[in-house]
Length: 202
Image (tube, rainbow, N blue to C red):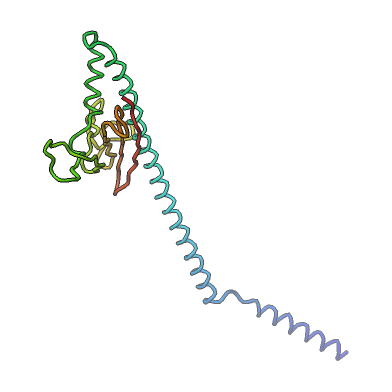
């Protein structure tokens, strides 16, 4: 009888200890968990910011490339139209033909400012070497049709100061005679740029 009673008392004490031993998290454990969660959230926020910035740059790069390609194709077509016009006698030119010639001279002429002397002043005053001087383009967007000055938006129309700047450079008789080196450059932001090069036959 005493042994059964002792067992009952022991079981009651064990259950009592089990109930009291189920305590919650300590303050240190909670603080560590909060710290780890905070670090994880900060890393996630940084990744999100970088992703947004990368998407923004990618969008700008795509738009700038489109503007450069659009101008390059326009100048190629203009060159082809010009070659067709000058193949005809000038007396037979129409008003449209003359407009093509004028547009060609406005957009595909080689400016003297891109040529530099390499061996000192020449008696003939003819510069010796072409230089892709970024500060002195042959043409800016206002030379094209419809004559919109920089900066421009992706549709080619006028834009606020945060738009794109489109310029192009022409080098006559390079890389061979009766050819033109053509470079179209679109810039935006802090030193970002897209450059496309091509050669036009004459």
